[in-house]
Image 1: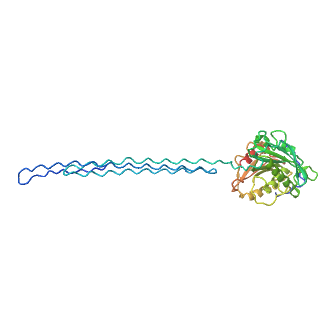
Image 2: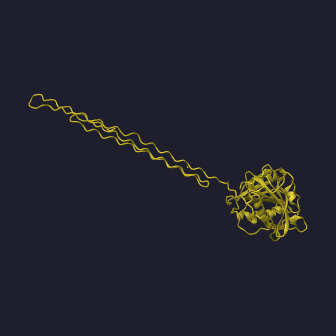
Image 3: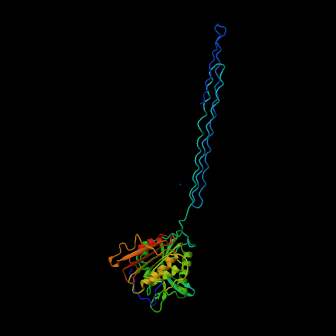
Length: 385
């Protein structure tokens, strides 16, 4: 999809695991010279009683069932039974051999079985379902909505295989100056900056329409915050009418649409943004501390929105996301496989950012245009969260 390059009226630069005992025999000799009478042989000693068998070990207690996703702890294995004591040796008879000691007790008791591990609890994968889950979806078409007495319009694209109980990713595509909702929505897979085909019915897509900007076509001047108010009205409606994952709302746009993406990020109204050739000085950038994952694209010799403005906008999120100024080449990179006429191209990732809030910045050899072949890159970036 091609985006016409249009000059902005106002472009301002700056914008995370067996006993035995032997008895003795006696055979005394008679006295007085005559042979003595043989001693009487002692009676055999009685056999000692066998030792008692050891008691079997106690069976371990079964583990408890895991609660809310936690796996239950396995039961403790029962201790082995103590072996029986050997029977005491038989008392020796008079002069006879001692009786054999009793047999030892039976083998140790059986070790107790380990308890059963508790079943893991179920989880929802981190999604934050909206109140619209369980409802039939609206049709894919153009809609209007009242925002403080002003009628605003947008085009909605709902997955053709929509599951009313599945929380969907929600992505907004903002158009450039002089563009329209229809320009971004398109009529095929290239729509929504290439996300229509790449998302493959796994996202709800929205293309809002701007207001006249100084007679130069529709844009996102955001006068008195009216475009942010428009976004908030849409968000309220979509969360109520559709099954939206409230933790996965994303924004992208080119030129004035890139500026609006930056403004939305500054307002903390998205999990991640991906502006293309935008700055933060026209649609504005409210002060705040909410981190927002960021991926920006900008042509090195942009003659409409100077790259310095794009860098300034990027730096807002470098700071908010707690990143350092150190960068490393991104791998894989959007630049990989990009046509030779867009070279040199570099994509870098800022280091030290808060987990889950990366900042990636891509510069390439181009004037003022939307990042080419960006659909797969945008989808990969957004869906990592």
